[in-house]
Length: 41
Image (cartoon, rainbow, N blue to C red; front, top):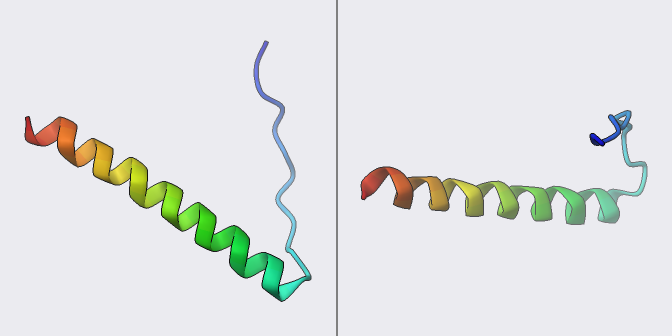
């Protein structure tokens, strides 16, 4: 069973939006660091 596609909507709460994007950015950077280690070795 696959994942359900979610509709992307703008977060009206500015503090909640900042938290969401900071978490997303940290997750993306974490994945990037993992890819760098795989490619390097």
